[in-house]
Image (tube, rainbow, N blue to C red):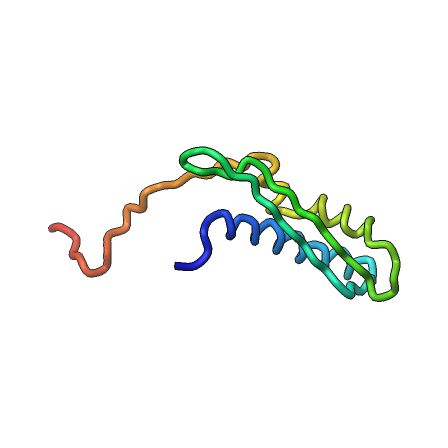
Length: 106
């Protein structure tokens, strides 16, 4: 069946951060040797929802400089985690499109 919602949310948080981390490093002419992120979602309720998320980041640069400033800058620019943290509203609307195999009434 594929990923569940919690897995996709954790992937979005971690994936977006890793992408931003690479962009930030590139903008400072720093080459990354290794990135590892571990995202933990805390879930509760019925229906189940994510109540918080925690991401642990490991980053090593090729020249051995401390990556803490790059990590902090990526944290500030990460669209997914920043949007979630601000509580972005989500609207779910019903489409007015009809299935293609059913003709419109005359």
